[in-house]
Image 1: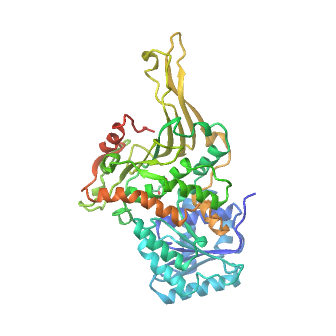
Image 2: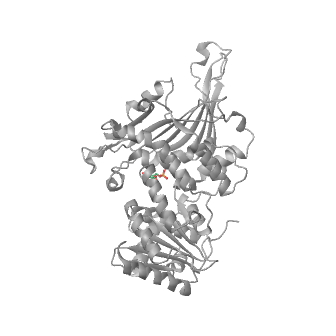
Image 3: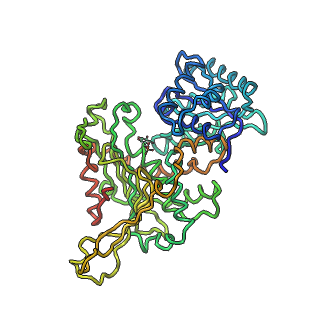
Length: 493
Ligand code: BG6
């Protein structure tokens, strides 16, 4: 049976933002609707709006109706709405934080939230220090007794390089102890990402081939078809590598490459992930083993779309919307196996997948003409959409001659299971309220990830503007070249 959260209040800073509206508010409602929140749950919004509690509740309701996944039920909503509060103020406003403190204390009495509060920072990183200092000043970061807890949830980007991440970690840890810090990497909340562990460690089938003896290389792709329209403010100066490779893709790499943890406790999982991330090295020289691009106008299917520079980005912006890097994992299991990571906006289609591409058979007892259509075997973990796993291998084409061609064997979540997967944010919010840290990267993972990415970012910072690529394609030419140099090619998912 899934565990139900205990009495608690969730305070969201940044309730007027896109993330709150699209993900957080619906996730709170869906958790309640699935019966996973207690009757004594409260949701508190904090923002610079002249809103009453009712105005805020109406905003949440609208967001829930638009984006919830479990179906809107008025009766469920009314129950949740009783615990919704709003506090008006800016992050610099001491009085507003005092009011927040009073509001939370009042909720302890009115709703029975028992002094258990999670503070969700869905705000621009530059505001983190101000809010953290306010929480410290008002003692809101301090549990009131041995049975109550205070937690902080931090959205990425967690720093913009190793140095700034260290500073931020030091600040966060000066207010909240590490075990009370929940850094969100929403990819870890995805069912298919958690399935990597099930696939690898619950089966006998894959382990014998999960190594450098069998695997030629690994490709991890997170491609999006959407552009940045409207998100220029957040994205400019950050770019694809910081936005996605530093967190989502390196976490996927860690799960694919790690050794079996001795148990599934969060500490053991983190220990294994940290070991992998510590052994990741960039393949040198970096300029030839990385690629970055910026999308120009093009076609997304039958829709004509504009380029980045027509979407509010400065013409001198060097922000990349496509990034690819090549790394190795310096361990006995993976020695010599390149891991290629790529991500981009306005690519051919929306797909996230991990492909383990196998070495060719050492000997083929066929004529070349019989195996012209035979590629390399591959195991593809389809993270989204069309969640599942594909095994690609050669098979004889029916007929009187011997001709071998690639075929796919598929497992599809949609067909194998009748229950649908919960949204990543639902799972993660619930885990925050339960104090279950397994799916949250710890400070060391974040710092190691920057350590991997920093040399690439430094290299790019000194080499001018990213290469252009046409919207709707698979990125800049340099991305193909970086693979072609070793006789490899990106998959076209
Ligand atoms: C976020 C990035 O972390 O992930 C966004 O900041 C990106 O730029 C988003 O669009 C994609 O998430 P998903 O779950 O749709 O793959």
